[in-house]
Image 1: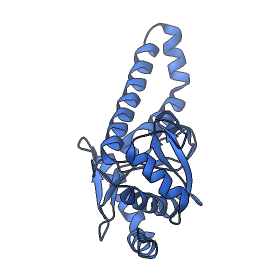
Image 2 (image 1 turned 90 degrees about the vertical axis):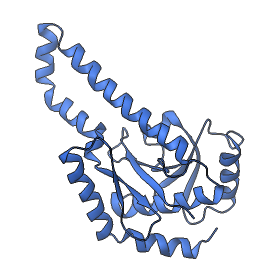
Image 3 (image 1 turned 90 degrees about the horizontal axis):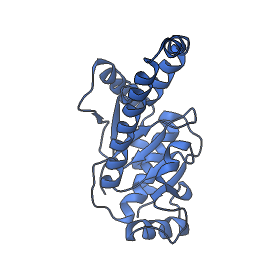
Length: 214
């Protein structure tokens, strides 16, 4: 029904989580979220390499009775018929980054706010670490010794490493890059597009949604 932005967010696990929709559709219907789940699952499986990706609805609680009308109706529909995805129920915002599921579905308004908050928290943590480790000779020595670990941490939480987000649901491959993208981010955005072409993501989405129309 509508294309959706599939953004990758870091987790404590080795693989990222797919957040969809991350900003394309502020107002959604349950049928749209179900298709977001289908598209996000295909992307997670074919591009990221996750077998039977777990799909959760971003909500204010794990119980089936929690949430607004959109969340409640989407949960009820997917519980009765998961439409070919591995539906695991509701997931709270704090659990998105803990690897509790592989694909998180929501409307674009909620998804975009979540994405921007995550970017801000990541920058804050890096900034605090940089400030604290610059105070005193012991801290500076520790910073030198821990430099490889900090470099790996920055790589895992830096949006530049993910390059860009796929706009799934259009007849082709479209990668949306961050407004502040540098050369490294653009390089990785091209990589995301290349991998999506190699795995024929568009055709697989078309095939799945034709079989399980909602």
